Amino acid sequence: MRRVAPLLLALAAPALLGQAAPKLVPDVSNRAVEIRYSFTGADLLLFGAILYPGGRTPSRPADIAVVLRGPVQPIILREKQKIAGIWMNADSSRFRSAPSFYAVASSRPLDQLVDERTAAVYELGVQNLQLSPGGGAQPDKARRFEAGLLDLKRRAGLYSEDPNGVEISEGVLYRARIFIPSQVPVGTYTAETFLIDRGKVLAVATKDIEVSQAGIERNIGIAARRYSLLYGLAAVLLSLGLGWAAAALFRRRV
Image (cartoon, rainbow, N blue to C red; front, side):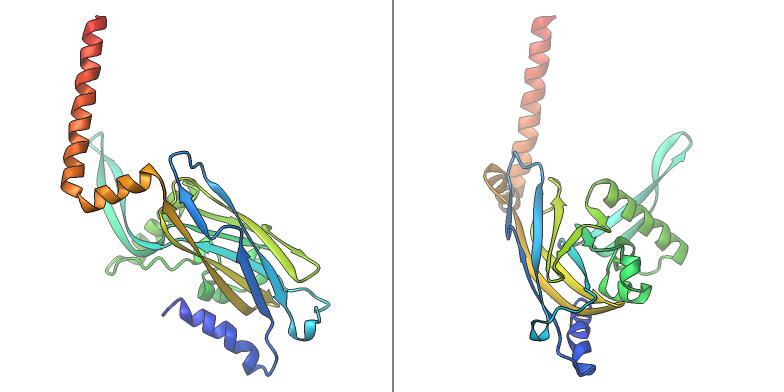
């Protein structure tokens, strides 16, 4: 419901002003990304057109922001501290709905396109993600863990911002490239395109992208879910076998 409200707001705004609304016609270069053993990442091209009422392009072209968002997942973040010379888990915090992947590209820096309130409503920018921290945490603690989570995601390449990543041609055609790293989780990803003019979101359009495992990785994943006990035993036996083989080889060489 929280994600639906901004979309309804964007669609209703032009009608409330008594104006015909421009429309977005988005598309993506690949609506299905398969992760195989050789997968090292993929460049995803998000492109489309802006349809203005009557086909008249305004003298001042609007801006575009494109967001690629992965499925949300609960995350438990633990903070380590050095106690008596040993690193130990000292504190933890739970986030109920952190996006597994988030990348935003825009035609100009986001702070030049919208104000803080609008950015927060549409979750434009990493700092505006609604991570839903667990209840009961003190504000200082919540902010500290949220900053830590964002930093970890950025360093892993799972959260990113490109303030000049959208190219607009002739005021009506746009394109942006977003890199999907190899360690992304599988699931349904959502590509959102925002048409922005004078600080207001005029239109929003979405496309879904499926990221899935293929080949032997998919078969292993299915086996691990369906036969978890047998999979665990097989993994333990394989580890023991490899360890025994390595020890035997070492003894022969000695």
